[in-house]
Length: 265
Image 1 (cartoon, one colour):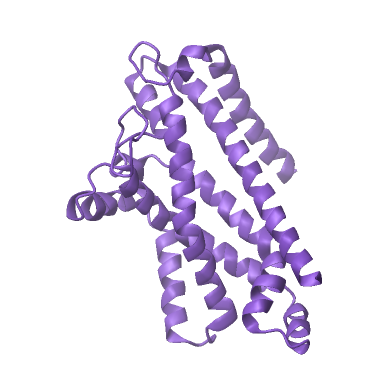
Image 2 (cartoon, one colour; image 1 turned 45 degrees about the vertical axis):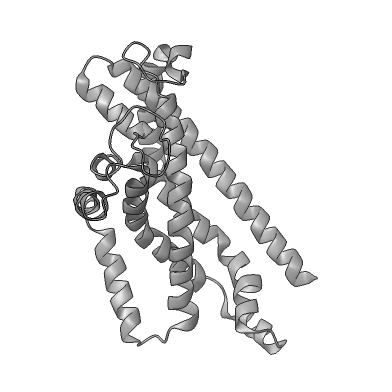
């Protein structure tokens, strides 16, 4: 019954977006430059993809390596470990508007990044770090200790065991955290409004402003004139998320397979 209710809610939301937006999908929405006539979402789509990959490049290594440190290296009663856990739990409960205000005060004003792709990336990177760290910890805890013990018994080093034995086994759980992070990145509006900005163009560099698909939807819906185009943007946003998640899954499976083959060799 719970699964049926969950699927029903998801189906109703997606169906509502499709019904409202599919009739508004037209070639003018995918023109290279945004104008008040075409209401093109193409610049926002490119900006969203750029933000996703830049954020994951920064946040994923930090989050994953932090999770490995907490589980594989740090002592359980270490005070630093307790501080890191408290910090991650606190960060995960902070509203996104607070992240946006922090990003605006620190990155935009203090560091003088202005409204830019870099300021938005760093702010969102801080937001998704707790999610990646916690998912990595849970994935590592789910790996059977017998795999580690067997590797050590054969004379393998700790670093070899982590990258060749533990990482492939924990990859599905780590990937789940990364996919959830992608969902938070593409769905964020409040934090990006104060850091990335809302310029309807493709960012020319790290210090150039832009807007994501979610921000594009927000701007169109709040204007009240192009509501149907905002629903069409929602359809494109769903497709982009599905494509990025699919690519992430392929890369993770390839990495896991290469690690297992290397271990066997």
